Length: 234
Image 1 (cartoon, rainbow, N blue to C red):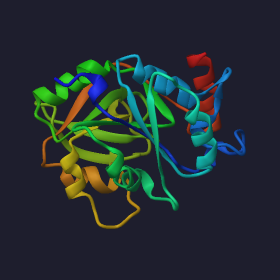
Image 2 (image 1 turned 90 degrees about the horizontal axis):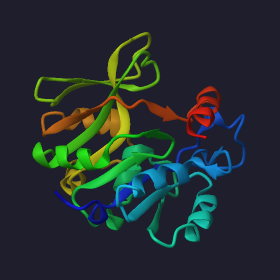
Image 3 (image 1 turned 180 degrees about the horizontal axis):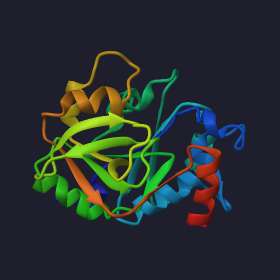
């Protein structure tokens, strides 16, 4: 198993965050404050606590705010920026960062959510399964706004369904992925695509595995969930 310090971390933080803009104005969504810290600080600190050292922030909307802040933020971590000049979607943002990514596998995290999985166990799972891609998943009572994952008894992913209305007690995407670098050769040619709905379903027969956790997902995607996150994470 690779030491986490040898695994690059890609954080997706370039989206517009339109639903949150009515309460968090003029800043990118991951910079929304939880007490005195940006949510992105909490996410980076959690990941770094497992020994990860090198972070690539995929910036887009108001990229200069994130870049200015994290240019000076950490002395003990390497922070680099992969800026998208136009909206690329989650998949396009990862593809755009290819030249910055040195490790295989590399870890990807959503910049607007946190699920406190055991990242060392996640890495160990990925290597034991000899996976091309591993996705952290967790159970939820209501999955209206999350991607739903179906797995078999080997924990292989056999189906994705994005944001099914009214479903309950299903496995959802928890916002952490481990990917081998060979995924770049399988990505679509178009610049703008979603890793969740455009890419993962197309490579479903290529060793995709689900790492199950009991931890819940905390996200700041809407004003209501942002308020809830402030209480949970403070």
